[in-house]
Image (cartoon, rainbow, N blue to C red):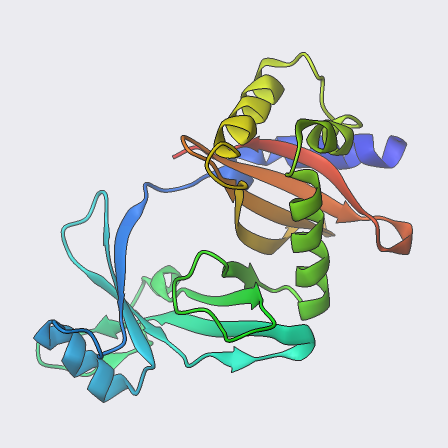
Length: 237
């Protein structure tokens, strides 16, 4: 119990960093086989040798951001995966590269998408894919199975969060209400699984989307490979 208490303090001290989220972007993926493909997209597909291109417009941006998408690959244990990397053009007629403008290296984002699928790999952007940065295949399978198990019912969620949450806390009630509301449509979607380090201690962040909010769980791996929740909170813009 002491270990959980210490870990929770570390997480709460940085919760704004862990759970901060920007406004959603409107994105579309092009493979070049669509009936209508903008000339800009077709040129990028040809020059970058990408399997697909994602075009996104953020809620606070007017310009379009492009990302290169790799071909699907099949990994261990039936995992399907593909990669994305941000693309940049430094002059209007210049080539598209992975190199961001000077001083804006933080824009050089990349992501690995994984899905547990024994059949044909889903299409790019399919909701079965989860962003899985700095996560091994085995850990990804373990963490996604854990979320699937605890997200199916209120009782399973309560059991998972009871060691670290005040069950009468207002934020906990909002989280439970959001998950309950989401289950009316479909199981709450796991959006991203990633490594998160606090005080040189490794944890894992599970980001979840619901009808109205986005939430995050911080989990730890206990002895024997058991997944335990050590923190949770609402993602805020």
